[in-house]
Length: 177
Image (cartoon, rainbow, N blue to C red):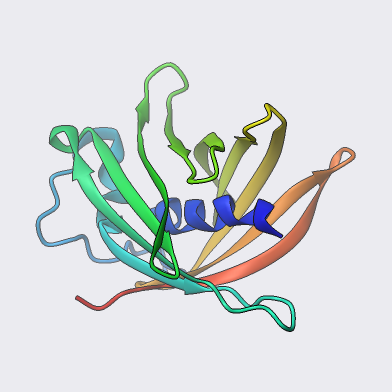
């Protein structure tokens, strides 16, 4: 069950890079300093909230992600908490070698997550790997589809043989300032 938690944080960070279902980007943060290749995701600055629906007998987890401009607008920095406890701190930036927005972050459990973001049909596709403290590498994908200017759905997929299988979904909302 804990294996999917790094992915939940990732969704909070990169999901805002989507446009709305009507093809319009959500309103950017008022003090946006993001430029160049990251301009399409500048509006993701702010705080995003999701809550898991755990199996019976377990406590829901509230995920809170705060995203801010960093390095003179050349990157976005983020921090993530689960029920108020720090879990992740990372960034994403334009990777000129990959010609893609790349992301990287460590977890409080010692995992490292790294991947890229691309557009696919009516959603954004994140392809990434989570490396555990013992060196095990697990591939994942997340499909992010906007449902409005301040919220979106995301779906986690894991590799099963040669097929991507849905593992679970969450709904994120922008926290009012």
